[in-house]
Length: 575
Image (cartoon, rainbow, N blue to C red):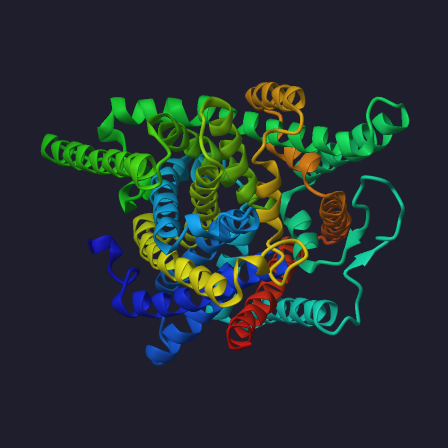
């Protein structure tokens, strides 16, 4: 507990819980109304630091602010997991078969699975693989700049302000178009350049090689399968789109299986075999610092803590299986499938967020839904429960891993963050369910759908997919290819994302990566032209400015989205 002192504090938890309730409510409304959900992490980081300094007379340490923002942002992705799946039930006319209690069981089940899975995944993705986690990096840089001030702070907050003004002019005043070249008539291809500071910054931060693979997947899917295959008469455009979506889901699923098979299972086995070498879940300060227990007595204590923690994790997973089996009436076999595939799905989510900043949580939920539908006879309503549980788990996984990355940069105790995440996630589950229940009660289930007041785009996709995979052969090919490619070290997840995501998203991220190539080339030439070591050091710092500015662009668009969502909640509820 000594290691948690000064990081997990009462005032931090109180501030985090208030912010969590507000952000979660806003996230539900935003996800349903706009069909999108910006990451609230950077916004939460700024607000956390501000209020901690206000209450502490200008004094607040970064680790306390980091844990506070972890609590504050936890509920947003729980809200997304519910909003991206459950409204599909209302669209299909089954509103009478789901109420707040069923939604709460779905949310709590997803939260428990997400927390357990990310505890197991943290060490691999944060310390071993060292993925970029651009959103988490942005949060860490925001806290550092906000605490230290100076030129770095001006650069960060200046870029955030630019992104915020740009987004407001684009989305709310219509001065700036959302898409360039969007009128290009290419059947079956969502062509265009999305004018999004956030997406351009993601391409800048992720790394050139990974984004090139991402873009290659997009080119292959859209201009190879959709345009080329249709022109050759192999299939029509609609069939080609089904093949592309199935292939993309298969590649991502195969990559997720590869992560589990190659990286997670061997490490879990070693952890079980040698409990003395690391604490359970890698969440304690000792594991973070790489220290080892010394002495037989300490070893016995550590081994005992491991058994207790592992037992609690197993009990939590068993509880989810029972909730799914009896509380949600899935039956024993589907409940076991959901629990097992949730580990695969959260690994997929953790890697996707780590490399791209994107968390297609409803897609992961949809993959597990289709697996359950293929192996069991489950009513349609229960299939949505399956998708909801997995989507919540994956959404929470993305948020947790971003927070863990920020903590890794700042030196925050991961155990303190995990506890904070658990507090915020549970609170967020209750708030998200309450808001959804109020919205459907106030506006009616007919207000949800592609042509209704709440478009609920992702839930609409899930509703149209409950009948099965559009192309089972394409999904099978993608599954095998993704698994093999990951085993040989190829970034299969990036390839799958490129195949699945709309082309304009891939193209915009690619342009961001190309901007980084040009920026790095200029900085390299500048360093070569400077003779002294001090001058070269300054040039290197100027090169790193690009990362700070990109972090600000990420945060600026997120902040505007969350602020508008906060206003939209109150305006919408009062309408």
